[in-house]
Image 1 (cartoon, rainbow, N blue to C red):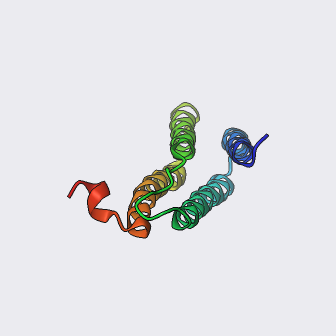
Image 2: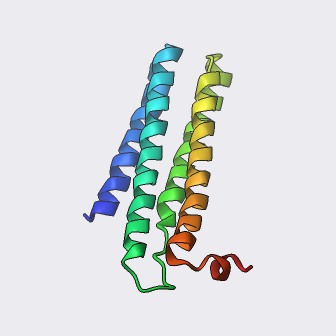
Length: 136
């Protein structure tokens, strides 16, 4: 298995762990700490991915750039969407307080979308093709 696939596999395993903890653990603060940690780890993973992409782009000839690994960002959005749906379902079926999880996973969405935007803009800045890529 390649490094990229193994990284995604570990993230999916962590997401399954968070989902199981949300279901089985009834203490809101414990689940909040786990979900916030997961959100931070996933944000760090995507940040390192952006840095790696920028580093590889610097090594390319002028005017060329490395494409982003968008599948990682899409996977992250799907993970956060599924966890958010689970939080809504658990809240409505078992009348558990999941407000802090909504916050944590909502921040996760913002981190992923911000990572996508900053990755594209960083590529433009590193290659010096800001005007060409933005259509200005």
